[in-house]
Length: 384
Image 1 (cartoon, one colour):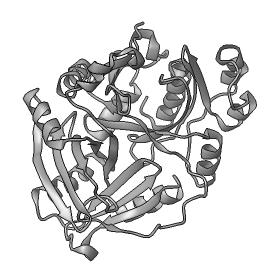
Image 2: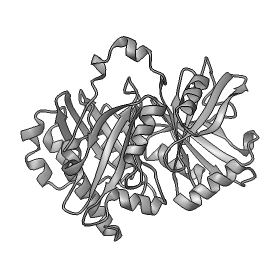
Image 3: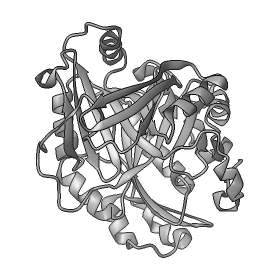
Image 4: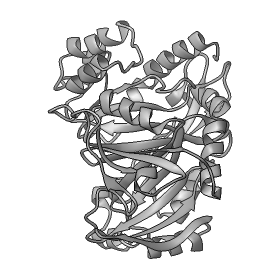
């Protein structure tokens, strides 16, 4: 078992200032979906997000329809193809046909898109879009894009005093439904990628070299293993921990792991789950359950000894038991977390809700309970 943690607070200030690839945070998680209008309705009603912008035929975009939803600092963009007429449209249509609904872009906001792109390409990244300006009456945005694992990309977004609802080409849109008075979540905590057997270290090295990200944590061996399945994971992050990307690969085991299942049904490497930060996981889970979101189940036995090793938390153990919320503690504090079931018919993309109290971990103490819960769902699907 190996676990390591980079202590950002002890990193010299001058080293942070010299970051060769500074980032401001996650800009958006962009999905290619079969029906963006219906997907926007789902994330509005089930996740409590607010529709804020739209791009489509009604404002001169003939090929695609895109809906932009937000919750605090978290932003989702849902795009579907109406009639493919360009290479981009054909790529989107083929992506949905090959993978089902999935994430095509983990967009990152940067202070200087030209400099970030130049550095990444110099370090070996494959450029997809060279830096270019897009403008409208609200101002100018600079965009560029590089490739990462599978068919996923990182669009680099530079906004300088841009006042529009998202990007040029988008218009403000009224909410589909009024969002709840209390936000269900506030930000994107981390985004997890699944890659093929033997390629995790390759992609960790990619982020180390191309973006200057550091290795934050790693979980190998017995850290993420049950009687039947196993996986390995390493977490890379920028110097301020605003952008965190765990990367998983399958490990040899008796049966098919959740990573194997994802790779089979997604058709290759891609984004497995998005963790959403909330400051009240109890209210979040109650609201999302009431709206129809299905979460993984956790047996009562998990909670019988939870208080002995987690200690006191903001939420009583009996409430955690009632809502099937997991808890974990490390040297810095504790966290509360819960995972949805896949949000589409394919057993691919799902979500995590996470409430942090000091801990910057990923729930290591919950791995066995979590993966046993996932295995129970795999067995129901006939995929274990």
